[in-house]
Image (tube, rainbow, N blue to C red; front, side):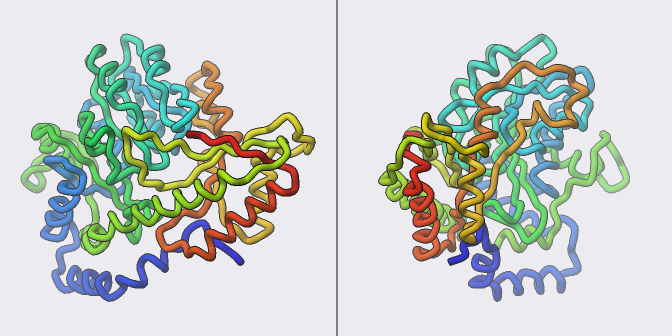
Length: 391
């Protein structure tokens, strides 16, 4: 049985009529930029995020850029961020002429290591960007304590974790800003590009709204140099249709993750490799934007290729979708060579060589998940794997 990594049609088809109605409503209104649809979606999204203010923007990347602009980050400034994450986090820093300072990851959750954050702070540091990777919170108490000692604002990158919480508090509300992506593959996905910026600070919210619209208020009267970061009214309307389903989408992902945990824990091979399941810490929720395992070399591994690559090839041969998030840490990317030699970040480098993500989208069927598990079992029974839980 072929199993896709993701199938967006299965999510959108059951609400097709509602999506078409939203499209027709926007078409008939003639209001395509900002307006009522955006206002309504921002109010609903703020409630879900547990934030006082939500500002719809053109993408998750632009949400990061906008937050940095609102905090007046620029040339000569340094911003602390993880190396093991998607490019947009550090790319947004570099676009403003600031310097991304890369930190290593925790061995269990994939998120940035607070101890390494503390080590990298210099007199030029101006902000910290923790990323809640794969749907689980970073160590926000420690990060916010470090930020407080150094008087640094915190921008939470919630691109993969909208709706998750840390010790009962919604992500995106623990720092100065939270930035959200609605890229179609996210738990709440648009039908195109869209994002959100959330904050509890009234002044930052007002400044962000100005910057989103070329710094103009009213039209043609520019108080600061901003940009065009507006969310489309159409995307806001479509997201408004999908938002009430977010909890159900997330719960289905969690159910699939629990099923993988139960089944994969039972596998036992002959010591050639070890499979580490995702750690899901009890003091924070995990919305499972990805179900990412680590495939580690064991004492009996004899093949020239890495065990991770061998597993992925095995899955591909059986029609099982998978993906590697992320094969090259940011500090090792060619585009950041201008920063000069980077200190070694051994954990994130190791993760990049070991990770592979399995299908976990909400509409994944029991038969499809069983096929994924069976493919994993075949890999193990070939004598290539033993299981070590990441818990």
